[in-house]
Image (cartoon, rainbow, N blue to C red; front, side):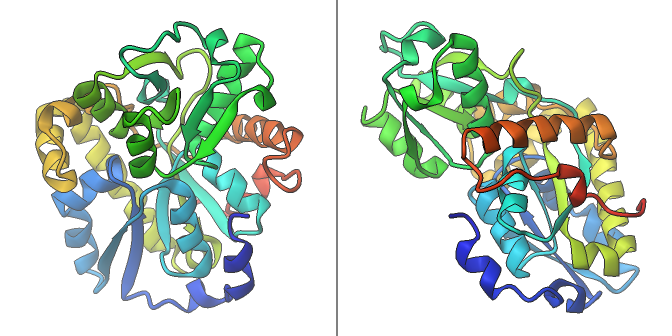
Length: 307
């Protein structure tokens, strides 16, 4: 189970003991944090306070939150589902911000020659995805819309790179994936979108911090959020520049990055009660399907004060 080993080895005070001289940020292959890293504006802002930034890339949200839980990073970004799995497993994290809904940035795709044409055709099929990631909830909602029980499909849990290899060699019938891996599958493999998140999920991106770190260093967390908001505002008006920076940061072709950047939702916001209620609905569904070991109260993972 996610975090099973990590929780026992975590030291509750580890993050708070982390020096204010450095903030350790976990990021994934794409998104506003990657853009912020590429522009270097956070380093300039924090240098005036004698604080440096250490960046660590993770292949997906669940493992990023493992790093947050065991104290190897202080701050990171993930989709909707990983914080729910992490909270259910005992991770001591807090929500500190989110991006607007971006339902078009994740999808269920099938090979270009596939006979699968509708969601209903997924019954009995083998579907690959990253367990506990944002697309896990997309699959649940898509099957629900098609009237298919979750147990009536074969799920294969693999991280994005392995999932793509499995998809390419025809070992699975469909792949549930997010950008920029989604854009790469469309551009490079000719993968066909069976359904994206539109009308099914919000697909928020969340910014989270280790609770001890957020409580000990609220000013640094606030500065990170402020710089994210600035780079998001800039990025929404400069897609070509965003494409150039992210292409350099990720090593992906510019056409792939541009497709992903065009459907990304920009604009960091505080986590509102409405967003927490949306997260609670996801958590309740996962608990009902026994995808998490116990029900959770999402609002327990909110900071007790405003940044």
